[in-house]
Length: 261
Image 1: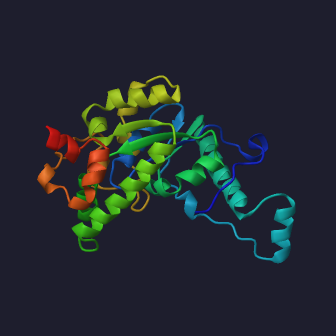
Image 2: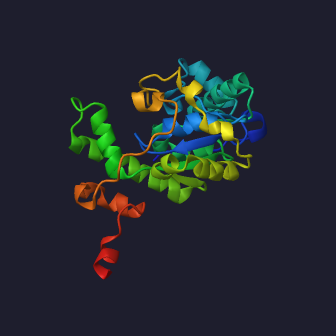
């Protein structure tokens, strides 16, 4: 496991202060959450930016030595780039807090926390079996239900590892769709922001800018209003591989508790 170091001097090496990262599985409502958050007068939540896939490579020995003499290794240079991109988007928006929600952040939480030691985290959960079904249905010709369940488990394990190691606020997709105002108030409280009713009116923000590969783009999200979540699967419908994750997140009682009951 690669160890990433924090900035040597946050005051000079980072333009951003207290960026917010949503850590979630795929197909868990992160696009809905980011559209709702982007409705706040102080929050800018752009489409998925996939920062961890942006890399910096010195192309000559001299360029590598020059950066080394400045105390910058490759990861440091990439972190400077990431910070600059997010800061640019924040300045362009005229707002004061950036929110980044790429689901693959779940696999980069250690690096994010090292890059921005003052980062804040919102953990978005969804029933793992519902994640698997949604992921399968998004492209059934390319991924079987078994493959989708395996990917849902991979994300669930990564999200839970991040949630166990980082401070933050946890939101369930099912709760967000059932009572969006209550859940958004919780997030605003965590971020030290006042609740704004306009956050719920995301229709205009959903009208454009939804692109495949950069978040959800399908008909449900394009309605511009929070849609009811699909009914939770019955316990008998949960793949065996996902039972432990469902138990850990409280979607199923643990087998020990069930036996005791």
